Amino acid sequence: MSGSPECIFCEIVSGQSEASIVFRDELVTVFMDIHPVNPGHLLVVPNQHASGIDDVPEAVCARMFIIGRRMARALRRSGLRCEGVNLYLADGEAAGQDVFHSHLHVIPRFRGNPGSFHLKVDFSAAASREDLDVQAEAIRSSLDSAGAGSRV
Ligand code: 5GP
Ligand code: ZN
Image (cartoon, rainbow, N blue to C red; front, top):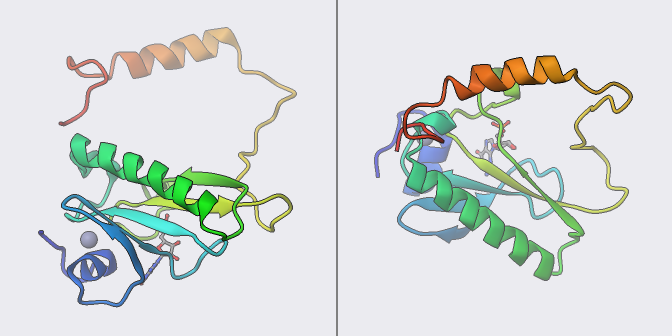
């Protein structure tokens, strides 16, 4: 397990800092968020330090989401209040990432709870097909030859 100096999540993964661990395997560790949006708020982190999601090997990304899904199922059965779940990953400062060891939030939600993860979508105005096609082409042409491609 390779850590990064002064990374709080590396310290948690290596056991140097305290955390309430829910699950761990050879690729990922899951622990309780210290500032939960709701009780039961979990973080799924790669065991190996990677600041952004593009630095996380694909197999580990897959594991993060597989375990995130499993955690969501466990939350629904746990007796904690959980009527829905947000899987949320902030990648980059502009996206709201505060801790630069990539992580997937698994957040229990229930009707009427304070705070909102609803995207501020303006349903009154759909984007033009022309704009969407231009944007789609820009993204398509940036995919590498592997297709869905980024680093494996
Ligand atoms: P971000 O804003 O980067 O998507 O999320 C970072 C999350 O890490 C926040 O929800 C924050 O509460 C959590 N966090 C920050 N420091 C610690 C810590 O020392 N221990 C735990 N368990 N969670 C932390
Ligand atoms: Zn780290």
